Amino acid sequence: MAGQHRAVAAGSPMRAAIAVACLATIAGCATTAPRATTAELQKQVADTERAFAQTMADRNFAAFGTFLATDAIFFAGAKPLHGKQEVADAWKRFYDKPDAPFSWRPETVEVLESGTLALSSGPVFDPAGKQFATFTSIWRLEAPGVWRIVFDKGNEVCDCAKAP
Figure 1 (cartoon, one colour):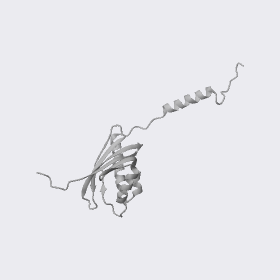
Figure 2: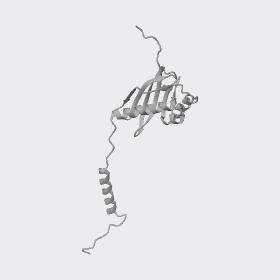
Figure 3: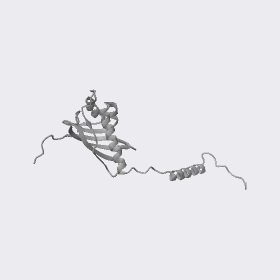
Figure 4: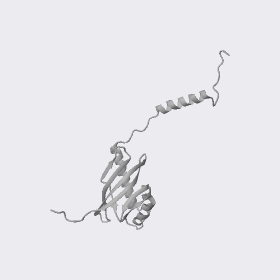
């Protein structure tokens, strides 16, 4: 038997150990993508907010729904709207007519250090371009580069003279 080589049989414990060792070596060489910087995440959220607002300008209700988290809560009227479907149902009326009833844009965007939650806020304009409200939205990172809105609240702005 001296000088003879034994082949490692398929399915043997030795073959399995070699395969595990090879996979561990390969996995150790793999690199993970570096985490985006806060500035990059802020840009992602601002771009997402602008794309969300563009659905109104484009009258694209189907696209509007793609920005909503399944568990989204929108504060509107007397009671909050809970869930993607309830929000979409309530907002459908804003997309029914040929002209957008309002527009908005982000002015402030902040992202938590964890990089998973963000706030956007800015003015809301009537069709003539006059600001009549502000919005505040909370966005959640649901996949790399994919932000969905989880909370949204609008507030009217006062059109009154400032006190001296």
